[in-house]
Amino acid sequence: MRIRATVAVASGALALSAFAVPAAQATGSDGGSGDTRITKVVVDGDNKASVGVSDPKTIKVSVTATDDSGIAGAEAFSMVGPGYGFLETGKPVCTASSATTSTCTASVLVDPKTDYLSNASAGTWYVDAWIDANDGDYIWKEKAGSFNFQRASKLTVNASPEPVTKGRTLTVTGKLSRANWETLSYKGYTNQSVKLQFRKAGTSTYSTVKTITSNSTGDLKTTTTANYDGYWRFSFAGTTTTPAVSATGDYVDVR
Image: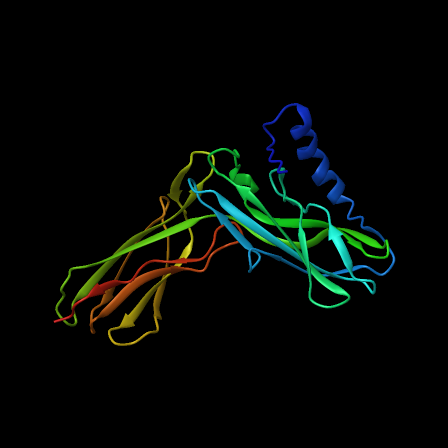
């Protein structure tokens, strides 16, 4: 089962979940019995999950736990975040890696077209987990792990003129944008540091030439000197709310 609620919900079970879960988490209280322990929590492989404006996103949660009797199972994992964000996975499947340790995995599907995501919900989220052991021990841990729930990003680049005379000025433009979950469209990401990078033809590594800042509409524009054939791109390191992204390199022939 999955529950998704925002501050706009006014009544019913969803509203209760939206307000009760963050309040409970604020106590920081954990519970348990015996020697069951959670040792690792991983969300989507790298503890980052980005959602765009059209395609559904499956978020995978893996919780590793240990007990001297082995792990019997787990309850659905809850994920809570800013803006009264709340998600709940399906029933986890636990796979043993030894007699005492198992990793329990579950997922939740987030659809930006139907889940009414709030931009305010982007940021650091926490995973709450309940794990049961074979001997009746258990652990319930709030904030067992964390991850960044992010608004998907896009980055474009265009270098001109093409071709260009060696030693002449090259103008490089582009745009940094990110998902606006409330309008289901991509909007410019303003006042962000973006690197201009170059990869010489025949090589495989980009080098940073300079760093510029996106303007009030997310647009990027700078100039550089053309000396070699190669690829120009913009690269954005990402933030808590927005994933890192690099534009596809634009090849320029220098004559």
